[in-house]
Image (cartoon, rainbow, N blue to C red; front, side, top):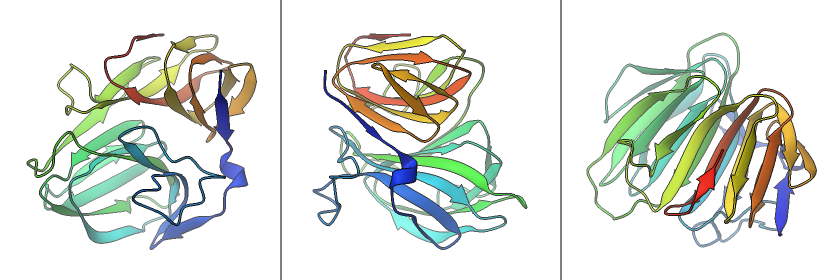
Length: 228
């Protein structure tokens, strides 16, 4: 069983504008300069992951995207969103916004408070180019995983499945196929190795046991079996 764990604290600090972040996944086709000996190149159409914080009352100025699906997860505080897909949206932790840039959209994201706001953002190749731009806001509740991309629950269609949520102490995740997993809070044991907040796991198969109340994000190709 091949397992790789990337520790957030081992990566160089980066960021732009009012965002401090570390990029944990960069697809080498899109970012040929990426050093994939210390970060991941992703999994199939999962191409990018950044984890970090928005500075108090600051953020990213308006900027464009096209032909990418963006999953933004707010882990603490609240992040405001405005742009061509609509103004005035506020995502509060624990919450998710999924944006389909499609033929093109412009937006800005900004912290709404006097304290840092933690986030994780993932990018996926869409199932086709030139789709209609759209977005969804998703609230997370309880000790369960919510499918935010690629599911049969009304989420955007995708070749990938992205689930976000929380596990109770002792709860298990079992995947018998390749999967990537980000620990957003708490800690646990992944394939016999200890992992903690902001660790990123990529593996051929996964047996994860939450050691305490633990936040997780899982990413895998669709039409594979899994259970929790």
